[in-house]
Image (cartoon, rainbow, N blue to C red; front, side):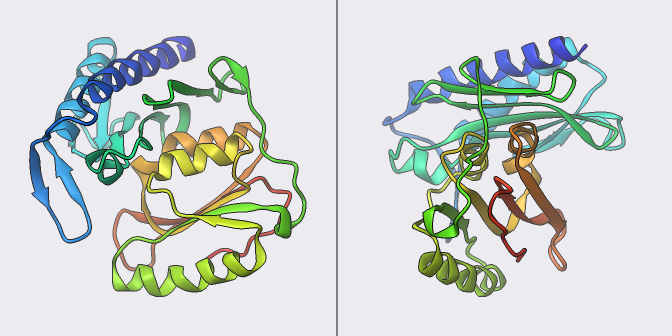
Length: 251
C-alpha cells in the first residue's frame, strides 16, 4: 500500500510540475491580487490535476488543499496538497517554488513528495520504509552544532501579529546565525532542512499544506519538528523545523 501511495504522489507531483514549468515566464491569469498575496488560475488548475490523479487511484480518500477541500473531512485517509507553494515567486518569475503533496492516515502523515520543477529536484518520503530521498539519493540533516555556523530561514507572513512575532526571531537569528534567509517557499524551506542545506526553518503562522510533506522528511532525515496550533488563528500553526544539533527556542 505504501508503495502505491508514494507512486501516486510522485506521478501527481511530476505531472503538475510539468504544467507549472510550462507556464513559467508566461502571462498568467490572476484570480485575486491581495495586498500581500496573489491567487492564480494556475493554482486551481494544478490542484485539480493533482486531485484527478489521486482520486483515480484512491476514490474514497479526501482532499485537504490550499485551493479547496473535497470528500469527507472526517475520512481516515486524506491528501494534503499545496499545488504551487511560492506563488508570488512564480508570478514574479523567481524560479523558487514547489509542489507539496502529503498523505495522512488517521492524522499521521505516512507519505510525502515535494517537487521543485525548475531544478528538477524530487524529494520523496515514506514512513513505512523509513526513507527520505532527493532524486533517489538518501538525505540527512546537517551535523553543524554551532548556531554561528548555521543558516536559518525565518518566514514572516504579513499580518500584524505575525510581524510582531517574527521580527524579534529574525533579528535574533541575524545576530547569532551565520546567515538568515527569507526565500518565499515554506515547502522548500522545510525540505532544505531535511537535506542539510538549512539548519532550521522558523515561522509563526503557516498552513499545514505548506509543510505537511516536509515535516515527515525532516523527521526521517534525523531532524526535529516542533509544530503547535496558532493560539488565535484557526488552521494556522507555528513551526520550528531543525536538524536537532542546535537548540532553537520555539516562537
